[in-house]
Amino acid sequence: MSLHLYQVDAFTNRLFGGNPAAVVPLSEWLPDHVMCAISAENNLSETAFFVPAIDNGADFHLRWFTPTVEVDLCGHATLASAFVLFSELAWQSNLLRFTTASGLLSARRRDDGMITLDLPALSGHEVDVPEGLESAIGQKVVDFRRAVMDMAVLQDESAVCGVKPDLDYLRSLEGDGLIITSAGDSCDCVSRYFAPNSGIDEDPVTGSAHCTIAPYWAEKLDKASLIARQVSKRGGDVYCELVDDRVLISGNACLYLKGQLALVE
Figure 1: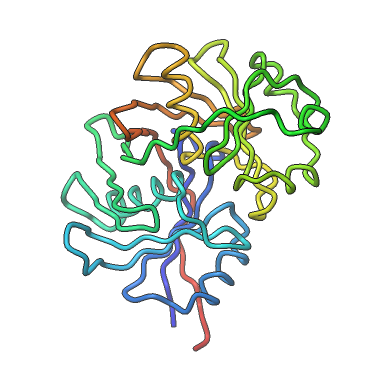
Figure 2: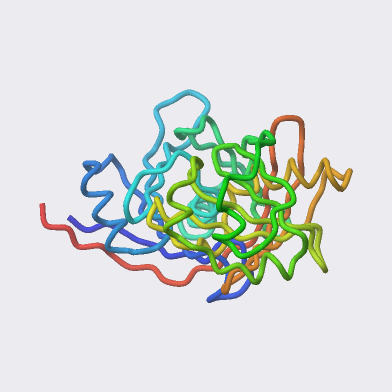
């Protein structure tokens, strides 16, 4: 069995930036253990698999895997999947609809070449700062929110950039991972994201994290449209717009490689 594989740098307009994701188009699902093994072999933060959808209202059924687990939502691998369909597989419409574990998601190709994802807003609720967190990240936490991901708000961009987290401590937190964020020096907000329980020490650019980041900073800054930057080593820009209970997340993408997977049946 031979399958096509694409690797795409998402949320960047240059190679070797943003967040790399692998994309594997399928005609039918592989066994879960095979998709897990492919994702572990790729050793990227996510590998996306999609098949043509038979559901009304969707074009494809989309799933995402880290090197260790399947996840319910992944923004950058959704952007990468849409990029492959638009740019490599000649999808004719400017709109794509994916049915996923997080419901129906859409991707729209813009005239400027960016792709806009329509994702659910996942606003966090305020809770006490977990004991030991400030010591684990070496910074003062000025606000802490809990959603699917935990989110710690820090004093400023330099604090976010300076964090060297205790990953063993982060594994003890309740959320799927930890977002750290602050207002930005040259953009509306900055962030980083750590998910050691999912096999991701630090994710380069995390679209799904902005489902929580965007509602928070939209309220704090009193603006619905935000320019966000993830200040990981690779870095990337995420353009966010809050519309009711949805977050529209836009970004660029670049093709890094395409090839074939050789699987022995």
